[in-house]
Length: 163
Image (tube, rainbow, N blue to C red):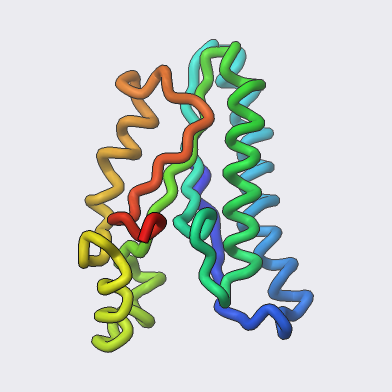
């Protein structure tokens, strides 16, 4: 699973070089290095699953997440590109794009009742997602039930990306 990421809320006019470099290193360089290490063994065995954890930001970028959203869009591009390379070797690679999921990382912002209510109002299902909302999708993409899914972007966002 490619789940390395860091998101920093910043105005695009004031993104410091250090912040840019840090997000690129964590969100793009680390997943690339993991893929480069893991794929040879999967290809040799003729079987494997790679699941990249993307974000609804790929489709509906937050105004203060220019770099984060861009890296997640790039990751999705990589998934689509790599799917053509690894598919012939029995390996699938897919992207799971969560919406607003209540996690420890998001808790500080979403614990403010007013912010949480505004966020929930933008989501057609009317609630934040939980980690349990992602489990079924992840299992599908990682096990034999999803063995014919390759290069896909599965959005689990309560409808946020279409609102």
